[in-house]
Length: 68
Image 1 (cartoon, rainbow, N blue to C red):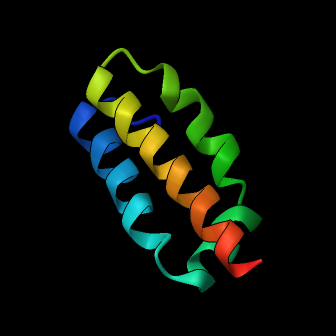
Image 2: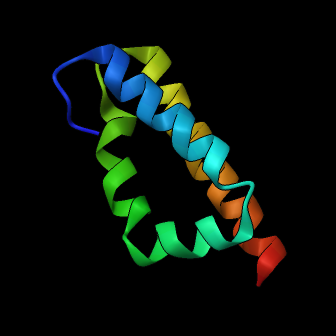
């Protein structure tokens, strides 16, 4: 998530957003502190990356609520 390439950071956020549609992935991501990892990305200089990070966090919260 802290890759120097904007493309890598954007792809990472998109990948996480896609992964969270799988309940087992949400639990695993939360166990590995995905929120703590994504939080700094919300301050990225690229607004598209910020949106992707916020979207990924939103999906984590939505899917986590569903599997709880």
